[in-house]
Length: 79
Image 1 (cartoon, rainbow, N blue to C red):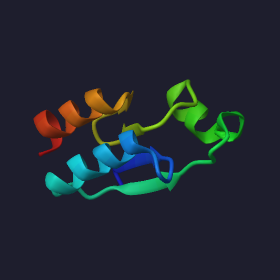
Image 2: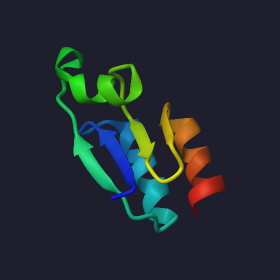
Image 3: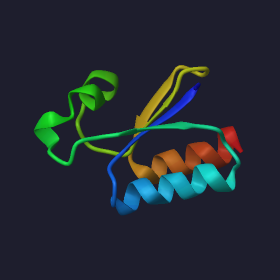
Image 4: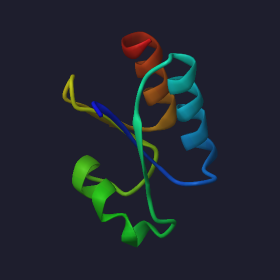
């Protein structure tokens, strides 16, 4: 999958990004992360930080955090 979303179950910001991706009909995979920040090694490896959501667009070489930034990216680039 070219688009991967790192998300936490029950996270409202992650859900907002999922809704934006779904509304834009973007195919993506989800990597569910651990609730403990200290256990989010995969997120840190791909983004340099442990917060979610994080979107990775392999096709375009983009990795980004912050739900508002991701939603704007989805609307302007992926929709």
